[in-house]
Length: 96
Image (cartoon, rainbow, N blue to C red; front, side, top):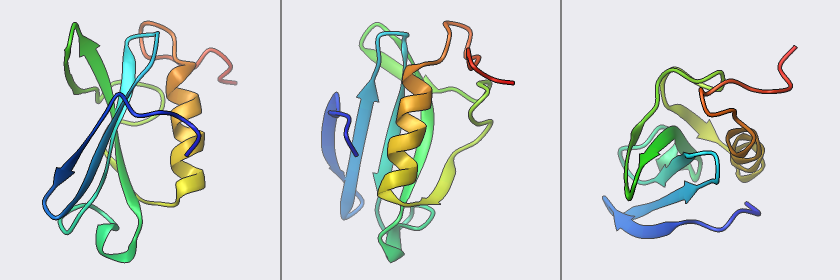
């Protein structure tokens, strides 16, 4: 992953990394015993929307309407690039 987390913290015996981008979106990326793929070394990602310092999962973007699981490091990095490029309303600017 070539992005720098906004914050990193332990979670359920694993890790949560939260990313924040200038467009107001970000991602919660987790790997722990309860995450989708965590027990096999894969990541789970949820798109998030920031409101000041607070954030919540965003289920209405072009990228995802739920969390995405069983992701490799490369897949997480690609999703982070896409999230960073979202418009303010959660739409992908280069979507066909």
